[in-house]
Length: 277
Image (cartoon, rainbow, N blue to C red; front, side, top):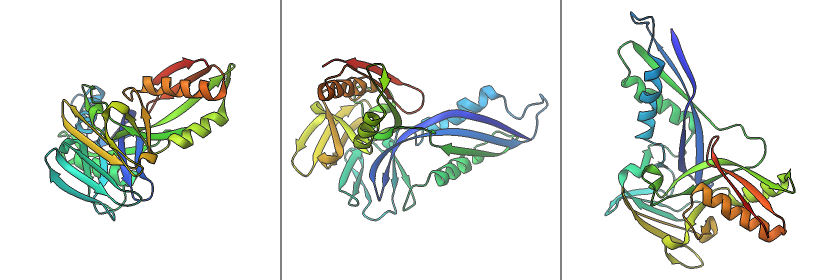
């Protein structure tokens, strides 16, 4: 007997890609549980399935930086903050933070299906008595039109969003004169894709080669250094509300049109902002 739960939850994180660098990701989580029916006629109460799996993901790789420790140019070492991750290819980056802000994977390239298999194995090992196997599937959101992945950190957040290198893969909708502006959406999504969004007040050093930001949050001290060309600098915290507002202002100033931006943060949530020239 099998039990399934589609769209059980979502994972929002960032990963290091040896070809593209820092990438924001959002994965949908579907689950199938195999096992034997109990005396109550159930394999496992649906009310228990979601919190059990979600707790495992929330306390694990969700809102972390996924690091392929066997990739060329990647080194991981202890530091005062907890862990230090350095990369060289395709560009130099250094991230420091508490250990729980990182998920270290013994691979050269992070593959979504391999991550799902690893999570499935761990959950199977921790399964309830009448469950014999847990199988998770991870998938990207099917997006027709513009989408981009970004990474950021929110030092004032009370939860795991305070981690300096986590991210999202998001839709982008832009409206002017009552109509969707698909070409503008594509242009801005392409520019934002794989960028790090940083609050100006968190920058402690910058030059033509690199930008360094640092902040203290409830979970610890975080520092990140990467090429400034890979960043978008905002004067505000990089919440989705402020991202939407920043984009609307940029669009209104450049096109001399009143602009409305629907900025998504991963799956099915986000913020709406309007601006006039």
